[in-house]
Amino acid sequence: MKKILLILALAFTTIGFSQTPEKMSYQAIIRDANENLISNKTIGLQISILENTASGKTVYLETHTPTTNINGLITLEIGTGSVVSGVFSQIDWSSGNYFIKSETDPLGGTDYSISGTSQLLSVPYALHAKTAENFSAYKIGDAAHGGIVFWVDKSGQHGLVLSADEVSDATKWFAGTFGSTQAKGNGVGAGKTNSSIIISSHVFLGDDGDLYAARLCNELEVVANNVIYGDWYLPSVFELKLMSLNVATLNATATTLGGDNLSNNFYWSSTEASNSMSKIVNPTNGQESSVLKGSLNRVRAIRTF
Image (cartoon, rainbow, N blue to C red; front, side, top):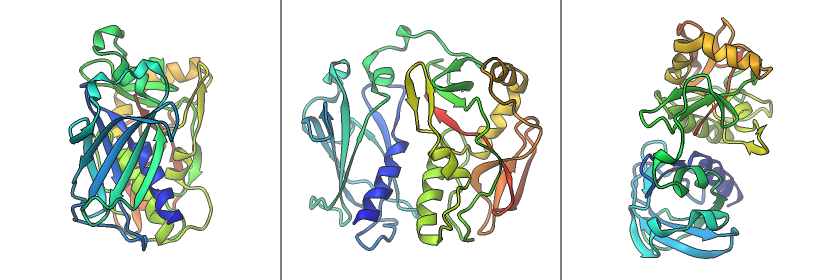
């Protein structure tokens, strides 16, 4: 059971917020008591929002019956389930700390046998403000949210930042054992799911104990304005190519922050190409290729805001 809880804790880092403040997007990788992926199955899921502490008062409770994909991944929106108690839109996010508790029945019922709890650190930005008009719009090259803004959505309030510093200038993609992780996602936000899949898959494929690209990003902590940002991930191919659209601007900000310029070299993406190969991208020109997972390439971490 210990390994199951660790995998779920990792999945909790994929919690994000939609543009609409009355719901949150949520993803998790589901495994059974024997550590096997639960693929293409309907499961029972109970979500609780807890106030102040990980064992605090339940201010909101709802249930879902999502269906996992072939990788055991579920995706849903908190705030749209079958409400048991509370009103999601009436939670006072400014009153203190909040935690999310997830309880799962792998058989699709209400006998919840797998659980985990994690603090919601991003609530003040995503939900406390009921309208995006309360914030000024971000632009490419801004130093914000622990990094450098390199993509912004139409609202101007949400987007992606890259770390000001290189995470590594020469590291491998895998944990030492070839095999399919099914981390095939590509697009904005896809790297977050890919990274979770890569790390959890190598627990079972084999892990030589050395650091590798996705794990280096996952373990990165950046302190900015007295805030610790620890939800970094390895970008997908598309996310790396977005950097190539504004290289000069991004490098100018990196220099101002005392960081590292994006190099005219290949960087690992989180997008897998095959059992033995993964995709690399040169973020200065968008060039893409595929190489052996044991090859040494650069790593730049990103996060959502």
